[in-house]
Length: 438
Image 1 (cartoon, rainbow, N blue to C red):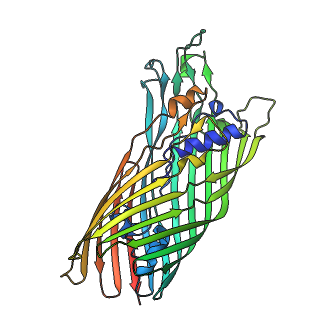
Image 2: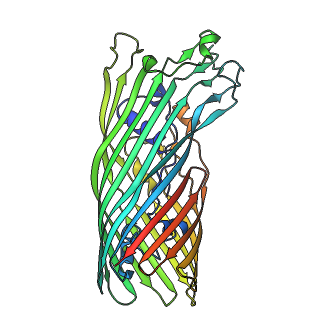
Image 3: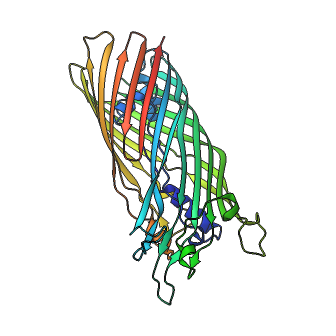
């Protein structure tokens, strides 16, 4: 699931305010995308509607109660590709008409896109089942993300009081994020219909976020300075705001799986988001006006990257001939837990809706399964209620995002291969999973 659309903006603003750094003076960083979809190509092909199925090793993360369904010990691994297309503000007009000179040629804000292509070992697990209980250990790539963007020529004006046009700081931003979780999960069969599961995960997070202001805010200067393109180099940095995370945390999960009848099943899960400690620093650059020496530490604060809890509830139905399976899932994501430092920023909790299906060709050797799914990632943009006109212009409501998924599975006697894809405007994902039972 995509958790924080524009969370990069949120993080920078909240940290800046907490440290006494005015966001207006530093400009506004661009969109930031986390991707926290459930592991496994089979789940991906179902459009993430997996909590009421949870019938392979990835249940250790998605719904640990489902581990009780595995009949034999198995080893599972998954590789993933993530293709990010992250939009951000590259310049343009906060208000006023462009002059059509130099960089001032766009009416309204100008949107650019940062692209990143990443691959990694997304999931690795071992499951050991018994008659009434089952345990699993796993490694999961919870997040993997990169971003680079530049904002050049953000203008406003004319202003009252004789100020005709104002040019904000040019910005350059770099983000690298990786979160890996190591987990232990277990399930217990209460009776033939009901199973319960719990999990414990240790998450290690590394994040490097750097936004740098270049040049100066230009007001009432000649047009060749006001509208000219400036190189964004190390030599013309005015100030730099960084947030470094190298931290770990323990978190819990729980789930249930209730087989209502031969065809119907109901599942639910809860996952606690880890809290990762980070260090914010605000330093002067080479072009800072005297008497402040370049490199001077202007502000420092310890802050927390608090990932939200997620609640899931789903229902699945397998038709009597066991060829067709349909699954639906509702997820509640507690985005509002992110904010502690700045009351002018807020984000509403979101509801994700997942729907998927699978058709198995039972007469084939190996068994062949085709899957398709769709899910809605709701608008969870940041609401800003302060007096910073730059933040008010850039923190605008967004749109719901639809994801379209498909998958293919090949099942042999003790060996299974699954592939899955998920496409959306912000991130495309491809997955290859291999399961061996013994």
